[in-house]
Length: 463
Image 1: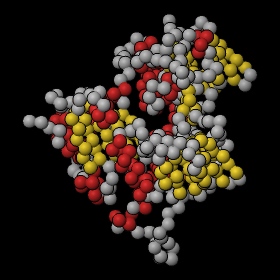
Image 2: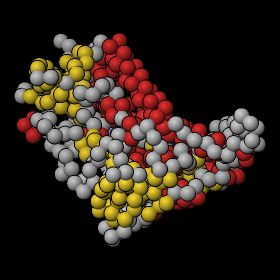
Image 3: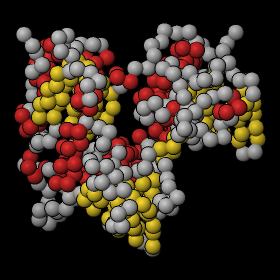
Image 4: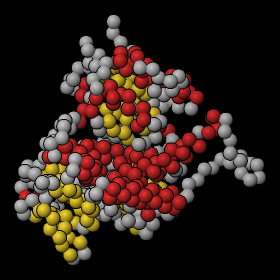
C-alpha cells in the first residue's frame, strides 16, 4: 500500500521533502498558498541575493580605477559617478524569483507531486483541510509535514505602510532610489540590506540595539564588517534601541528609547521573524509549540504528534533555507524507512551576504572562549594573499579551529569576497572530521583565495 504524504507549505522544507517522498515511491500532495518556493524563493533569499548581486557589481566598479580601469562619458571626459536604476533592478529581482518558482513547480510536476493552491489546516484523524476561495477539500494522510515558514516581525509602534516604512519583503516595490535609508536591526537581514543599499550609492543609517553589528556572528568578522561599512560612509548607531517609527509625508522618523531621533526618506524594519503557525489546528492535533509559537521538533523533524513532522523556519531550529531543506528530507527518510542521520547543527555552513561576506561552519570563537570546547585557533588575514592583492582586496581573513592532539578541524570562519564559496572546503573538513594536516595537504591553485585556507591549516600543524 502506497503511503500518502501531505505537506503544508511549498518552501524549501516542503518541496525538498516532496522530492524525497516521491523518489521513495510515496503519493505526495503539497498545499501551498503563495507559490512554490516559499518566502526563500519569492520574497527572501532569492530576491535579496539578486539585489545583492547588483550591489556587488557596483562595489567592484567603484574600485575599478585602482586596477587600472577607467570609465569615460560620450565626450571623453572621465566618468566619476555610477548610478543604479532601482526600478530595473527590482523588476529583474521579481522576474528571477518568479522564474525560480516556476522551475521548482515544473520539477514537482515531473515527480508526480500534486500541488493544491490554498490554505492547509490540520484536521482530525490525520487529515488536512484545504480551503481555496471558499471551497474546501479534505485530504487523508499517512504522514503530514508542516513547513509553513515565518514572516517579518513588526511592532505596534513600527507598522509598515509598504511605501516608506517597509519590511524586507516589501522593498522590491521601490522604483526610485531612497534619498536617505534607515535600517532598524543589525542582525543578518538588517546588515545585508544596509550593506547592499550602501553599495548602491544610498545614504544609509543602521540602527543597532547592540554594541556591534551582527552580534550573533564571529566578533572578529563583525569588527571587519563594521570597519568597512563605516569607512564607506554608513552611519552605524550602536546601542540604540528603536522605540517607534512614524511617517509624515515623505519623511520617516525613527525615535530611539533615549529620546534621539533619526529622519530619512525610507525605513526598513529588520526586527526578526515570527512563525506562521497561527490557525493551523496545532493544539487540537497535539502539536506542541514553544512560547514564541515555533513548532517543537526533534533531530529527525518529529513533532509531539505521531505521524506529524515539521521543517523550516516554523520550527525556529536554525532559520536557513539549507536547514529547512535538510529537515524536510530527514523527515521523509525517517518516515519512509530510508537511511537517515539526525540533524547536526555543528555541520551547517552559513553565510551573511554583506560586503565583505561572512561565512561560518562548526564551532565558533564564542564557544571556544566560553570553554564549551577546547580548540586551537589560527586567523590569517587575506591581505597577504597574492590573489587578494591582484583583486584589490584588503579586508577579510580565514580563521580555523582544530582540536588539540587530534588536529581535527571543528570549525572555521571566512570573511571576504565570495566567502560563501570559500567556506566549502572547511565545511567538508568539519563534516568528515578531517585533520588540519589533511586540509593543508590537498592541492590548491596558485594564486587563489582558497590558498589561504590551506595556509591557515598548515599553521595548525604540530610536530
